[in-house]
Image 1 (tube, one colour):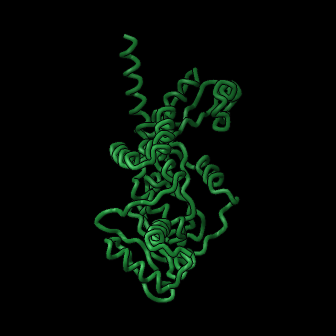
Image 2 (tube, rainbow, N blue to C red):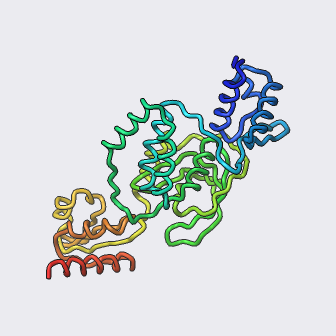
Image 3 (tube, one colour):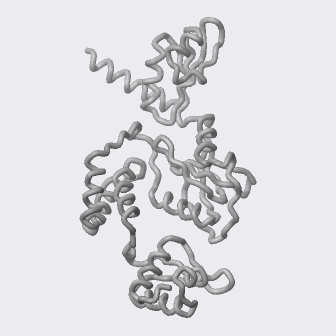
Length: 319
């Protein structure tokens, strides 16, 4: 039982920060006090300026609502270190977050204990990040945070989604997992309208909105969200289409470009097609250069424009 009032208040605040909503009974069990004590402690937090919202009824409970300022976070040593390291790496995959993450990191480092500050500094000084596609699509941090909470709390969300080459349409889904791959974020969810599993790219999601309707999680296909998403996106259409018809035998190309072996299809003994499509424009010229032979190209207009720009730069550099 947490009998010391200041310690119990800090513990209560910490618990409220870990879930979207807590029942009064669950909080009382965690703190080893009565429901009446919880209600009094919630009132004390409100008097201190913490925006704790309450709901009534069978499914009622408490949640830390949005306020004029974010309340202090209570982090243990591992959480503080993980947060500092994550701030250093997050900017590369989120929209417009470079300056924001540095400000947040400066605030965190200012209050870290000396022992943790030294650990974080060592990690920052000895860690580098390679961004293979700096011009690729980015994910809005607000959408990422909202969907992460919905996955954790098993809360149905709605949003508008724009598939590649398709029209925007509304979706209502049960979100299960977020998966990061190659600078992109994916949401694995069960689409209630289609009654099937779907994978959504976060940079194509607009206006995600929680519904406050909670669901019972379904078993994830293959029991491995990352493996399932990886298998699906490997066969999904890429952002930028580029199909080369190459004047060389398929077997020759397979030996020359081993990484594309499964994307090479023979047309006859001396000709084949190579699927050079990619989610990143910058990778397509490198793939085409690796063919090292003559070819014709069927590609999206954006791909052709990018190749002309790359060729012009190369020509200027050699004259």
